[in-house]
Length: 142
Image (tube, rainbow, N blue to C red; front, side):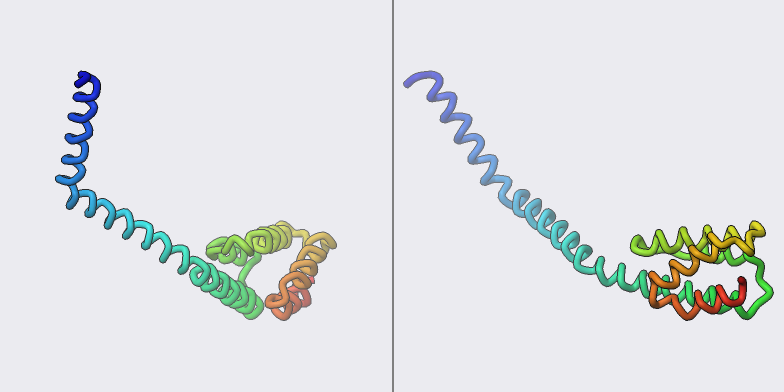
């Protein structure tokens, strides 16, 4: 026999025996990989619920902050701080930035600013769940 064939056969036999001997290790590795993929799949399935809960929580907290501001002697700066303390879902980042910017404009003394009012009116029209509270806020502050 050719030396190359003998060497190939020896390596092949050694490789097959190593794989067969490591059967329990290979099986353990396969189980770990399967468990990892399953946990990632579970996390992806739960993500929409988490995002939905985060959106609902943000909506409720934002409405609560605006309502509490209407019935208190809180300053615009304090309102801005309370808004900045909220956890904002990705879907509402533009809303939150616009709202904080508008409130900050009011805190800076731009009470009569048509731009601030226009921004708040745009938010009121865009986000139906916020209409009543923003309408009250606009009426009380302009």
